[in-house]
Length: 425
Ligand code: ACO
Image (cartoon, rainbow, N blue to C red; front, top):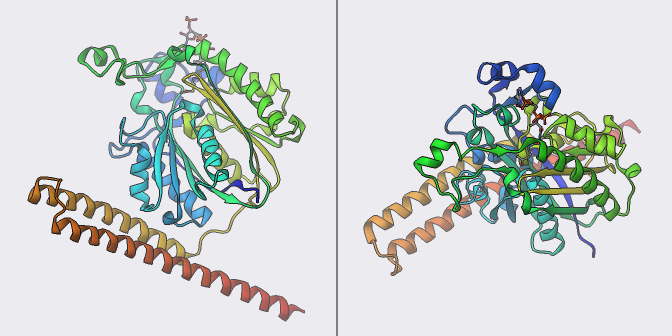
């Protein structure tokens, strides 16, 4: 039986704080007119709470996507977080998201392909699903670019914003979902878009910090030229690979970097109708890996996508990298909101996940303090393994009860509708 991978849930989260072009005028020598005419950006969202990070933005978007998909976190097999601004070099931000979601059966890893990362992530999820290695995967694009932006460099600081977008991808026997993907890279352009220091080539020192080498550096014009070329080529290629033509494509959702790049590539070079290219970069700027999923969520919320539509996601970024994916949209939108019982069940699940994470941390501390050597399996470890299992069981139980309640509500609704239909006849 052929297996397909379909997007069944979606969610976005952007920080509350809006940074407008007028705000930037007070920070660097720039103007609203220049930023609008050269990029199309009017404002962007920026985290201003020190406790917010890529993992917290990703978790919020993920919770919304899971609720939309009506998938319990325990049923996730894998979590992929694409990001250029992970919380740490390691552990992976995906692991922090896994912990916050209480996704106790999921593997988790980060994916680094700059702004192309979300489309790379979708392709990876598709591969896992068609290979039979996973059934349900969360793919997230999330960034806090404001933390690696040099707010005194007008060449870059006007471009970027923070945010996160997530989708739940699931195996299906219904044809559709991801039909083709194109992934590309050209490392000879690595220096064109780079955070030079804080990796192993140039570890952080007083000098790298003084030079601002831990911030984004970009050769804007070169990146622009590269972007226009690859966005058009990758779109052509992905459409061809799916056995379709550009006329079959209903929507292009491009990486939201610069309105001029989008116009020069997909609109002018491919002659694709501008009103079928989804754009929201005026409100969010370039949110790197998050830009395509945030745009997808807004396109859905605005009722633009219909079941059966062919959609191209296409992006480019540091690396240099580029990526495109062609999907046949399969979900009838809008989806009904989750019933309150299910929402309460999920909230309880997330509170329990926090509690479980807290208990696990303390258990490790107590064992380390009491027994020191990790070589011998102690009674305490045996006891704590039981506590772990008990915690997992409680979590599973809550998930099962909430999904039973949900199913009951759904079947009551169906019975009510049937009775209504009968009484009308
Ligand atoms: N305000 C006012 N003037 C500015 C600003 C600013 N914010 N930024 C640059 N300028 C000036 C420049 O200094 C230059 O002045 P000069 O001619 O006296 O030297 C002039 O404006 C024109 O500069 P250009 O670089 O030619 O401007 P351009 O039209 O190329 O626009 C931009 C610059 C917006 C950066 C564009 O090149 C671009 O969008 N490049 C692609 C960037 C991108 O998408 N990067 C993200 C990739 S995704 C990822 O992986 C994160």
